[in-house]
Amino acid sequence: MPKILTSPAAAGLLALSMAAPVHAAASDFEFQSVARTVKNGPGSELSVKLIDKRTGQPVPGAVVFRTRLDMSPDSMGEMEAKHEPLPSSEPGIYRFKADFTMAGGWAFTLQAKVPGEAETVEGSVVFQAKD
Ligand SMILES: [Cu+2]
Image: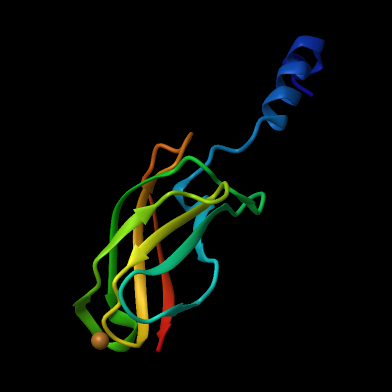
């Protein structure tokens, strides 16, 4: 065994580095739907939850800086719906108000800055708008 690993200080350092959390990556985070079905029409509400996949815990404090809501799940990717953020109701839940114009599948794509994560976190969540 190399001498450096037998010294108490080195052993302590080694234990410390093994106990330290693995560096987070953008892929450790995921946007999920809270409810897949939303009401078709103007002023409809949709919510997504941001979770840390390593712990399963919701992640509050993310800054969602770019979003797109379109019907790409129903091969109408050019069909977009206007939407705007609403205040969060609980930690890790991000709410929006959307003006749906057609029943069917809508993809909500988000880009966000997450506290402690240098990379941009991206995600896409599919909702079904129903009349
Ligand atoms: Cu459509």
